[in-house]
Image 1 (tube, rainbow, N blue to C red):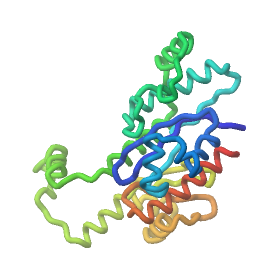
Image 2: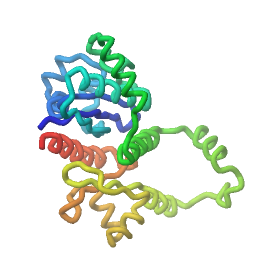
Image 3: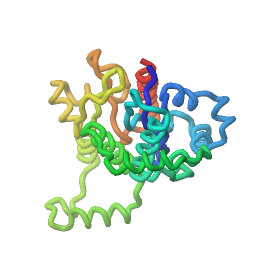
Image 4: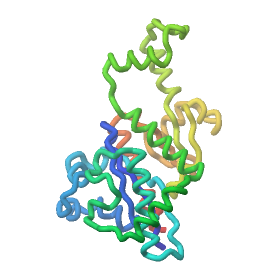
Amino acid sequence: MEKSGIYLWILKDSGKMYVGSAVDLSLKLKDYYSPLNLIRRDTYIFRAIISHGHSAFSLSILEYIDITNLSKEKIKALIFSKEQYYFDLYLPEYNTQKIARSSLGQKRSEATKALISKIKSGLTHTPKTRLKINETLKGKNLSKTLNTETRTKMALAKIGNKNPNFGKVHTAESRAKMGVREIPIFVYLLDGTLENNFTSVTEAGKFFKAQNKTILKYVKSGEIFREKYLHLKNSRTNNNDRGNILLLQVINVVKFVNQ
């Protein structure tokens, strides 16, 4: 059975985004892995994928949309409204058109416009969806590289000289340990469903009763952890590891929407 929803591409190095929607996610996502389609459809996101390669991007499903027993007009209105919500939320750079579906040259009927307006006015998200939105936004911010001056201003504005560690210099060893502790861990089931998340490797290790090095081993290798789980982490992973890990996530997403 086809699954409808909203998906998100993120270029990991820059944090640039693309938001898309589909009545059938399985068919839509396959287009991004077809060399012929990538060349034939001259769009900003397709050119970016050709230029950087799939491994430079992360792909996630922002929201699945239930279209059961809806008319075609209501399906369009519902999907358009959801897509527009994420346009407004993320301001995706790869979307050259900022109005949902305007890039396809489709003109909405007055009835469709009215339905979209009605749906948007009462649009709410489940706690799970809100969590995914927060995680994605957090990942986007983490993927951006800030210069020294900007980082200093942020630190002073957020913390100030009241911090007992203000002005102290950490050793390379302590910085490495702090970096490991602060890496967020996301736990996915094999069907692509987010099962749990932790703010650090240490927290994940305590939950699973495993050493930090064991958690990091599975995060970096992308191997299945304890048969049931797949560990992923955010953009703190280096480019090569991150590409391999997120490719596994993409494969699971495509497999999941085909079920």
